[in-house]
Length: 303
Image (tube, rainbow, N blue to C red; front, side, top):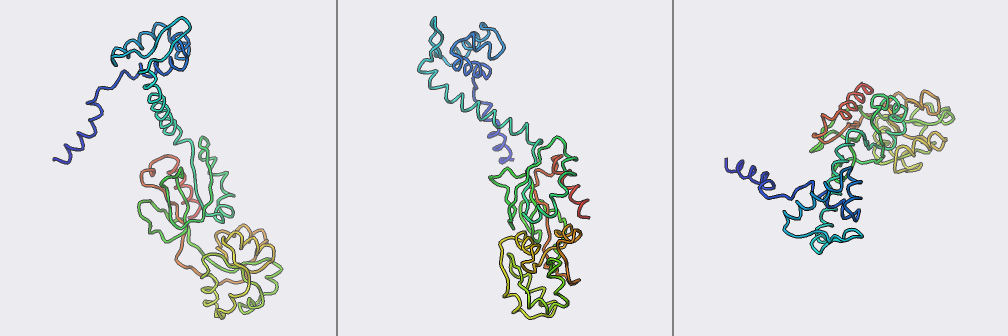
């Protein structure tokens, strides 16, 4: 009971303090900017007399004059000069906060791994935009293993992992299914996994995919020493497309390349390392229409 009373008291503390006439504060800022009551009235779409009355009420409340009135316009008093920057800063922050709330449903910022974005999401993006015609969908790529939303304008993210993250809602989309892929020219030189020993292998972080697949295929680990290492799967797949070696790629991400014939999967053997792609977002955003539509659409696309 005491805790509840203490919380209630802190919430109402602001209203126990006497606030100045808020309309008078905005009129004061307009008059200080305009330099005259008549121009301030034009800015606020009210009469000069209305502006003058608001300033008089504010000055009466504060117990001091804010303007020195003369024929050529207005000049701030010392008290007015000290009040103006506080008022301008407060009004600016209030306007920014309200603008952010007003447009929060009109922008959807997504963060995804670059390979997932380029090879799986991008071909489907027009369909999502059709579902969200009034929303500005913005995409940023970042190959992170931990979802981070603090100090960020990101609304939701696709992250690769095992789903054990704190303070976010995670929706499983699809598992990672790995198998070697290469250009048709190199594929013509491959009959068995042992043939990989004669070809450069293309690696990317993390570096355990090739050793795992080769072990499942019954090929020695020494085969993994040949080739080139990249920091992203996208670079490894691009190099494979150009015939520079054999990459180990996710079947879910290279289906379009396999269908178009620019990549070939020479073996049926795949490995699953227990990783999946997840849609993640802060729990408080779960009921936002844009997040709900995104979630349901992604689930339908990966079913």
